[in-house]
Length: 244
Image (tube, rainbow, N blue to C red; front, side, top):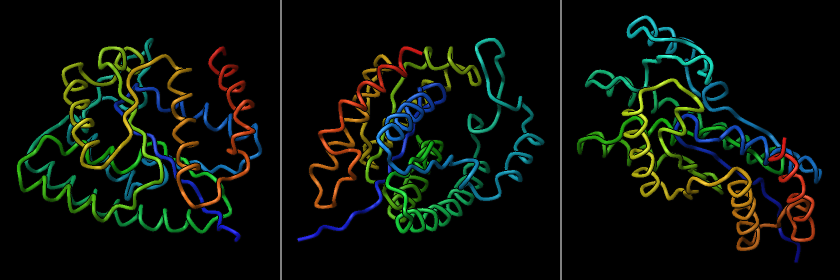
């Protein structure tokens, strides 16, 4: 009997500075080494609805710095760390639009010729901005989760807030701590696979192990590049990437 081959969807979530980009780059290198067809979506750049309008409104209303923080160039951002009742209403509205958009993106990705689709952040990262919350907003989060297409593999990269902020200094440590707790709470609601703070190489190995386990436990054909006999090449590539 010939099994169908399906696209594997993998998402990476976590606080700023958790190491998502590092792990995504390592996974891309590994898959490219074995000849897999890979597509990458950056949630904010490729999926979020009215991104530029939201950025402009947020900057005009709350001020704060723009760009990406670096250890040698820390920023003071004011966007998702601003909490108020009207911001909660605005977030629920925009996140609802993003939920509709992600459904379209995932449907198209499932029909593509790509073998692995990687999401650099997913809509779960937005939902984390609504937590903790009262019962009304919690119901909204649960409804949005029910309307959200779940990737095949959902990673939450956990990180020590102080270490994460040192890597990407954009938000106060107190907010980073609260944000981390929001992610951990969301992981229980969304069924996310939490990878604890570990050295880069060990996290990458866990990422690859998760994909291998998915392939082995599903009835969907595993793509050739992720078959067991190819894991050695991936491991060597991961080590090479970690040493750079």
